[in-house]
Image (cartoon, rainbow, N blue to C red):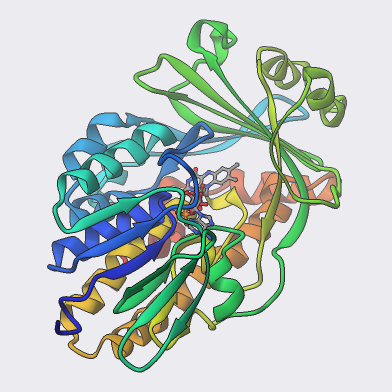
Length: 394
Ligand SMILES: Cc1cc2nc3c(=O)[nH]c(=O)nc-3n(C[C@H](O)[C@H](O)[C@H](O)COP(=O)(O)OP(=O)(O)OC[C@H]3O[C@@H](n4cnc5c(N)ncnc54)[C@H](O)[C@@H]3O)c2cc1C
């Protein structure tokens, strides 16, 4: 078997892993995707998609299906959570879409994952395996073997570690310890649209920014539901994922914000808690025949709403590089060199906007309001062009 005919192994069947499998299939590569969970799926609720995500959908061959799932919002709206007044908004209408060649949208995670999963299942180049946790790998100059938790060994030409924030593959490639706990606690809820306060049923991704806290909401799934994401910077010390919590616990961080903002939280149900983590950027994504992708490579806080978008861009770049170069290890290096500066910028700026836009207090918040409130649409588009104008190929 030639090296091009050997399957490529992918650890992780989240949005990043599935997108990588699809991109590789487009270039003629077979892959074996190894997912730890017993079933492929996504928990959680909404996800925002910048225009760069739509470039990736088209490249990966799922443009139409993904577009059919999305709600196309009119604005990114920033509210002051203390006064309940609008600070600014970014218009996402025709001028925005023409400028970036694509829209901005919101979509249910499960729906988006389902689009990728269906396309993967329809491809005879992709072998999806569940209950297959990758715990490590061995490699020589010609192949790499993934070691699975059950003792099985699976060999391929390359291994792509798309196994998320707590990546086992990263532990071996980068060896930089556990992720950084941000101390920011996020609570998520999805409510039927009729439960959302009527005067706030905006066709916008709305951010209410307050001292050490914020609230985000937007419509999802053909306006059937609203996604609520509420975050409190309470210096939580330990990582937590998806723990059910009471409304009273969610409200603890919001006693100081405007009644109108508090009221949004009162409409939430079935709240779940996450303590957010990220990492400092590092260039160590590649070890010979092994490369990282998505959150395994560059986990970031969600404040730019770009983690999944960047994972999809990674998939585009990786498949482009492997399609264009016969030397696969050189292709992995090329992928890393192209993706590192951009994803590192998003990681660092996500932290910065958390501090300077989402959570400031007092003078710092007044300064934010003055600077952001004075910006024209054209200035917003210019500032966001580096991000939304990206395709994963440039
Ligand atoms: C509150 C919140 C809001 C967000 N909002 C947005 C947004 O609006 N827009 C956006 O673009 N991004 C957003 N993100 C980020 C986005 O969710 C992630 O960046 C994205 O899901 C990462 O995808 P991934 O495939 O790299 O990793 P994951 O989604 O974590 O997938 C990893 C997969 O690997 C599997 N796995 C784990 N370990 C192993 C192993 N050892 N072997 C095999 N399989 C394994 C897991 O079961 C999982 O299926 C948000 C994140 C949070 C926390």
